[in-house]
Image (tube, rainbow, N blue to C red; front, side, top):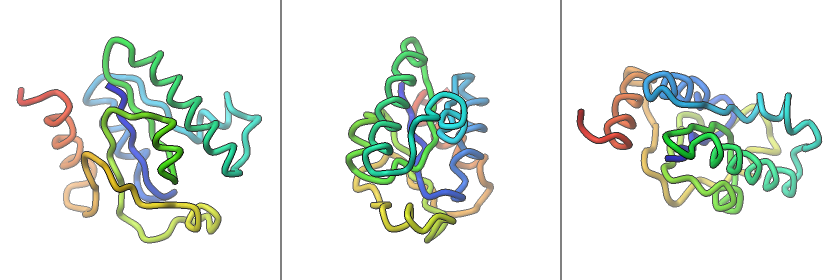
Length: 139
């Protein structure tokens, strides 16, 4: 199952995705890390963001062929989300604006998602438990 943890920069995507990957014992791809080491040729234009989503999606398709895989990145538009093609979407909606104004302007809240993270509660433990139950079923 290809799991997308998406939201604005600074919302807590990587914190949640890291904890979830540890719980599910699955690969986790962070977009910042992928851009730094693999997708160095991509910037932040609309076209490059679509290409980043396509590459992240393909990488996750390969790594998740026999189990879960998690990607965390902004995935700011419906087009980038469609290109990534997640099986399960977690929208981390804990902040109203991120640290990059261009991303804030481009970001379109998703219309479809499986889990919306809105509260601190016991973050990220509460949401790791919830998402694990949803993707693996009751244990």
